[in-house]
Length: 273
Ligand code: NFD
Image (cartoon, rainbow, N blue to C red; front, side, top):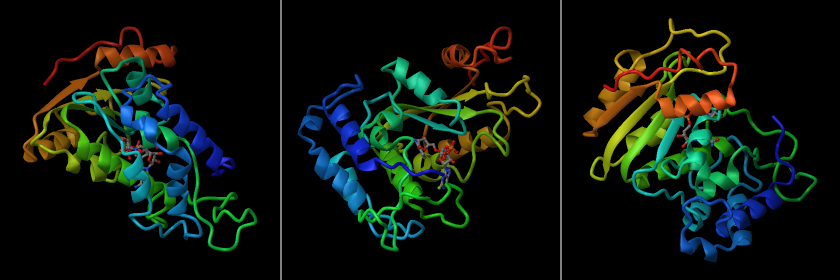
């Protein structure tokens, strides 16, 4: 996939936006003091001239120290299997009640960008590859530049979460709504701290981009991988709530996907378990 050509400028620009609280997100006074040039230099510094498939796990440590992902108590929202529908951002952006990683300082800076190091003397002299970066897909290149970034950011988001937290899952995800290889499964769920996280609410929603309603292959709160996740979280000593088709999210999805068969008569809430 294409790499982001003006990555340095974009990162600095986004950092300046975030620092000045232009986004209306929960904005900490300490953000004002962030030196965006230094932050971006530490972001790129860890990967310059580095083989994109062997990014060190600590490549972004200095960057994350400068701008860690921070959320307000009772607002942290995770998501998995719904990228492409943007449901998580729809929901999080219209309400201060939820914050997703993409609304935190580092998440906002990096979201939807593609970048990686170059080992063979690139023509720009930046030590970055502006031609091609590894695909997301895990098997051949698991420790790639982007995956390492999001893994660390996701883990930090989960580790700092306090109070009630939320996760949005796609009930019709092939292979199950809760995917064992997802970042939510590997970096987020296991790093929730039961001493400070008071409840995990699972919002199980259908895939609004499907042309016909297909409940045949949809999971419920009480079967398949969602049941597995509930047990996993309960074994961590966490309280768990699961809601299928929560109205607040269904409405926002219908605003985005007006023709979805899940809007109208299908947009009915189901009991909470
Ligand atoms: P997904 P998720 N290796 O829909 N987050 O649970 C590589 F290289 O399955 C945010 O994985 O949900 N890529 C962002 C992968 C990215 C892998 C990642 C993998 N093993 C994580 N697994 C972001 N803003 O870009 C999945 N991907 C790719 C945090 C997949 O192709 C958020 O806090 C898709 O582009 C959220 O709670 C994207 O990662 C959770 O982790 C999402 O895959 C969502 O990750």
